[in-house]
Image (tube, rainbow, N blue to C red; front, top):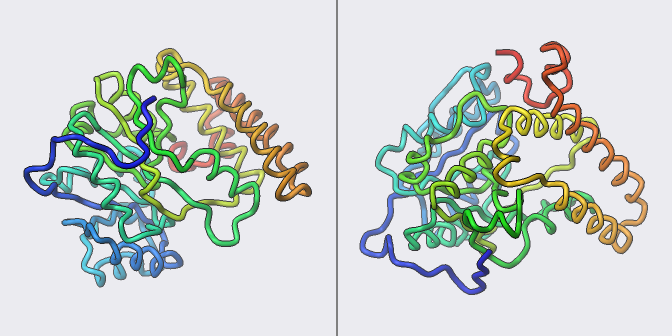
Length: 320
């Protein structure tokens, strides 16, 4: 892993300004819309195209997006797929050099967030990059620690060789605020359709296999965090287990995430002992719950489709 503390350097996109498309999948995003729209409008590097892919919203999201001047692609909510929907959006931006993806609840924190993440693509070897996620106002200590642990304040670049030192962590990525060189994305087949979770992880793994580098850009800031319930934690990790069971090549090529998991738990306990001691029991229960969900997900072939539907977070995946 190569650290870059000041800025990313390279020379692949200096001659002409890259065309940038911003893509936002939405479903009933009205409660987030004002903050999201204001965060986008303030960007010094405003995108050339903004595409909102809306999944059957009933709260006026599509109309609000059109009023903002954004392009809207409407799909049936039953057809939403983490990978397939994002790939559909990419195909609506054929002239873009860089595709920036945001989730509806990820708000750019500074006016230069897009500028920083686009700048890394000046290095012609960078295929994808993701920004730093900050905890939202009022976040719990458990929620805040997850962001501080996974999104440090030091940038880095990873490649196929990084797996030797980092294992599965080398392909960590987040489409909550992530960007792709369109040619690189398409060269590895784009986002997989019919994927339960981790469409970003799968693309990054393929990029590394193909010789591309990926970057974490600590200066590209977005506010994005969740306070998951214990049941949601189980379901989320069940889905991760299903992904690893169905895409076994990820584990074979990059190893397991068990070492990183232990490091996370120890870091979380230290953080909570200092900042919110009363949350320690909840954190321990959540750790067990996540482990249980993951292990059951890895054995999903032994479960009935109906049971998998009720256990998982991504209901659309099992209802198709």
